[in-house]
Length: 174
Image (cartoon, rainbow, N blue to C red):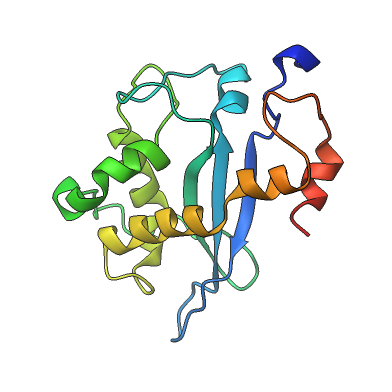
C-alpha cells in the first residue's frame, strides 16, 4: 500500500457506464468505458513504460471501450480476422497518443495496445460503429465528456493531495 506521501490517487481503473443508446437491434446494449490513472498503474507490481510521447499529463486516460450485452457480459473477439489498420485512424493518432496511451512494458509504443483493443472489443462494436475510426473516436469523445479528474476535484479529491478515501471516490460518481 502506498504511503500518504506517495499517494497518487489509488484508483487503478475507474469505469463509467457510457449511456450510448443503440437505436437498432443488436447484441450490443451498452458500452463500458474504462479510464486509468497512470500513477496507479505505474505503482502496481507490473510497473510501466511511458508512451513514446513522454510522460503523460496528470489526467485519466482511456483504457478501453467495451461493448456489453443486455446481461452486462462484455462481448469479445467477434472477428479476429479484422485487424487494426492505422490508415483508418490516422486523423486520431495524435490525440490517441495523449488520451489513449499504453503504459505496458517493455514497449512504449501504443500501437499493439490499440490493436488489442480493436481486435478484442472494437470488432464487437461494428453493429454500432461504422469502423475503426468511429470506435476509437467514441472512446475519446467519452473521455472528454466524463472528466473523472474534475468530478473528483469537485469532491475535494486530488492526486498528490492529502485526501485519501476510496469510499468517497466511489460516492463521487453517484
